[in-house]
Image (cartoon, rainbow over all chains, first blue to last red; front, side):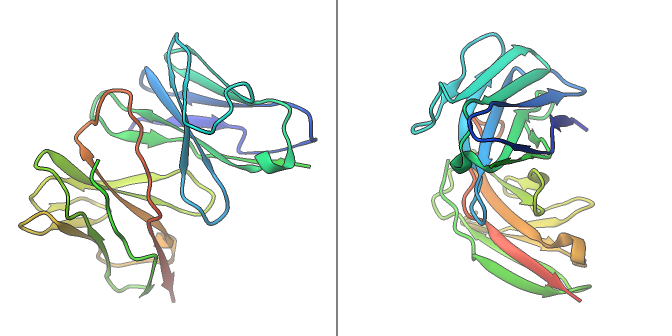
Length: 115
Length: 113
């Protein structure tokens, strides 16, 4: 089946530094990828939609200058958390729509801890 | 997409059937019912989806009422590994191109031995 590979699975960084999270579609082309954030005991919250070759669309309240999204190819989307702060600590998950069956597949998630 | 209502939590004994309900009284005729689950610290996993007929796959069965206002996801023989948050989502098949799945609060299923 369609697989999205997400890396790293876990990262700890110092406050003020930047962290990059990668999502790759392994066996299909993902024209569109979605990025979610999930705080403990809460549901997934959509952050942004990234389209290959164009600017990402951010949900209301998500700072586009802080969460940089790049979708330079049909198989790779990246999320960079810039100048991270402890309140950015969260579980970040990417997702892509599978063209073959209109379903959605998800990455395994990245646990970000900012200290 | 139509709104869904699920109980916040449910318990199930290992080996027994787990029946997870979902209400979607405002569902439209062209909207499907999708079920996903999220095991702790993992990304969501697709389980099953259906329009109006009951569906079954290797993971679960989906029973949709005749008026389509509610549905039940059935895990026939729950195991400890089925402990997860289960999300019921209603949307048009494929959705609008470029639109994401929107998750509600889901049902936390706890399977115990």
